[in-house]
Image 1 (spheres, helix red, strand yellow):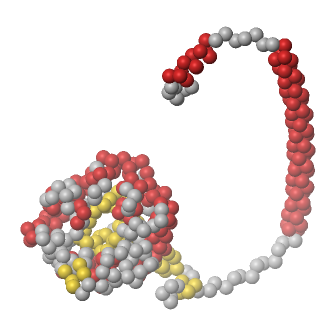
Image 2 (cartoon, helix red, strand yellow; image 1 turned 30 degrees about the horizontal axis):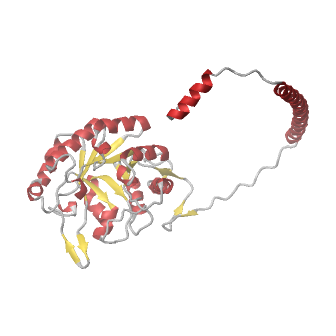
Image 3 (cartoon, one colour; image 1 turned 30 degrees about the vertical axis):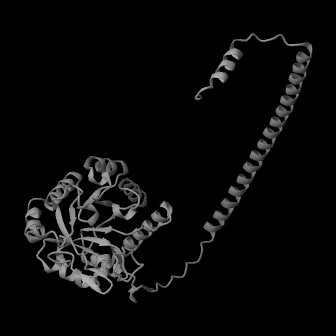
Amino acid sequence: MRGRTLSRSAADAHTLCSVAEPEEPSGRTRGARAAKATGSAAKRAVAAKKAVARTAVAKTSVAKTAVTKKATAKKAAKQEARAVAKPAPPKARAKVQPVPQRDGGLHVPGRTIVIPDAKVALSTASVYPENTAAAFEIAGRLGYDGVEVMVWTDPISQDIDALRRLSDYHGVPILAVHAPCLLITQRVWGTDPWAKLVRARAAAEKLGASAVVVHPPFRWQRQYARDFVQGIWRMAEETDVRFAVENMYPWRYRDREVAAYLPDWDPTDEDYRHFTVDLSHAATSRTDALAMVDRMGDRLAHVHLADGSGSAKDEHLIPGRGTQPCAELLERLARTGFDGHVVLEVNTRRSPGPVEREAELAEALAFTRLHLATAAQVGSSRN
């Protein structure tokens, strides 16, 4: 009766049964018991015979296997002896053919693939509607080099101690922190935008992250926007953490376009020390992403890799599913020896379930690994 609560009547019956004296069995009962015992003994005897028979069959099978192995070994020894006595004729040397590449070029023998020092990370926003903890688990299982923590309404994303425990448990480093700059995070870590950046910098320093991603101010944050460029410079000079300002996009509604950011949604118009380029944002702003990367030059420190089709909505598609030059950008980063982070910041919200979401994130990682490499001449100065 363990694990249950008895009703009063059931408890009374149970008590009565437990204290009642057993009755002396009748003659008929004793006879039935004897017959039952005899039948059980017969069954056990039959079972014992079957066990003996199975043992005999097993031994026979083992013996046959041993004989077969011995014959096979003997045959192999004869073949080896014949091969030694009569050496095989030399094989014809295969002709090496150039392999066509996606861009129309050829992979020529005598060249090697060079992979830059850039690490490939997963943004914790990429697993939404799952939480931050799930992002660490998925990143570790799929083989990402680390994560970028999107600080938002999930309490775990705001808790430095919890993030450190997740990083240690899954063996996944935290490479970057995305400051709470979104509309839905206006009250995360308070309402003062500068205080948010101070907390983001402290979190990055404590967690070992090398970059803080920050958006330009919203248009209604006029005081914050007035001092933003100089303020970012001051904060960057106080730490080794890179404050990488991200390109955004104008907001569109039907045929109307609204400039929602100050000083501008395109950060290359200002003098920032470091930039983050986001290809989905470039698609939404209908900007030439590679031309923007050229303007960023060696100040490009961080990449948010996602695709887009030029829709007015910020799509964050899996790389390769839109019209953005995701592959071309990765190959360029490889050629120039980019040493920042490439972060997959994609939208998997419409995935049917966790299995499909993980498959999409695996596809994104495979795409990035494939194209974040370049061919270099064997024996050249590049390593």
